[in-house]
Amino acid sequence: MFINWATNEITLKIVYYGPGLSGKTTNLQYIYQKLDPSLRGNLITLNTREDRTLFFDFLQLEFGKILGKKPRFNLYTVPGQVLYANSRKLILSGVDGIVFVADAQKDRIDDNLDSLLDLEENLINMGKTLQSFPWVLQYNKTDLPNRETAKRLERKLNYFQVPQYESVATRGVGVFETLKSIINMVVNSVQQHTY
Image 1 (cartoon, rainbow, N blue to C red):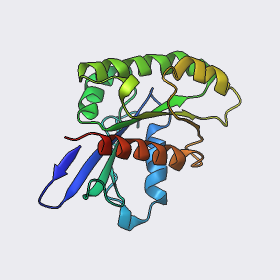
Image 2 (image 1 turned 135 degrees about the vertical axis):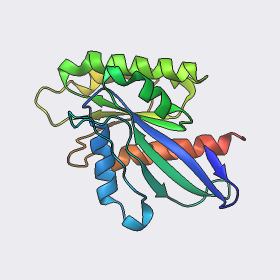
Image 3 (image 1 turned 60 degrees about the horizontal axis):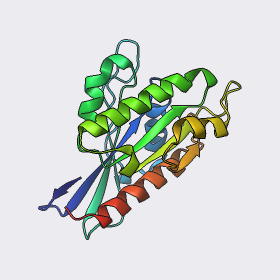
Image 4 (image 1 turned 90 degrees about the vertical axis):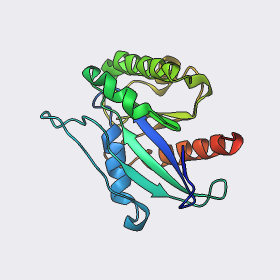
């Protein structure tokens, strides 16, 4: 959270986290395309030669007021590939809420678990933990024939019983429901804490 006293704005940071190719960037691209242009900022994407997200996507949304200030929500994705561990730590700095985008395909369970453990380790290094931090789970690619059952995904990944949403980010299914949920959690968290 960042408060700009001169403009009376509060900036809140939401990070989309998960394994490589789980649909994090697709979520942000869909949100960006569907939002009223007057409510959004620029979408900045940096890609590697393999055309995968290397650093982050950036998007600003504006809604109502929080603590009497105009909020701005910055949405970021992290690169899921293992070799970008330092980039993930940097992007998580100052995070207010997380959407964990899990790939619902059966053969991606271990990748999801590895990424979730990486997230928890990074948060612990920042003095936080998934147990008491605003985050939601999104089970993406639920339209694929080799998808895992929701029950098994819950058992393997949702050990803190956070809100979870099934999605097909390429078609926008579950994308805004996930975003609305994490925004509400972040707003409630900010209103309950004094900084």
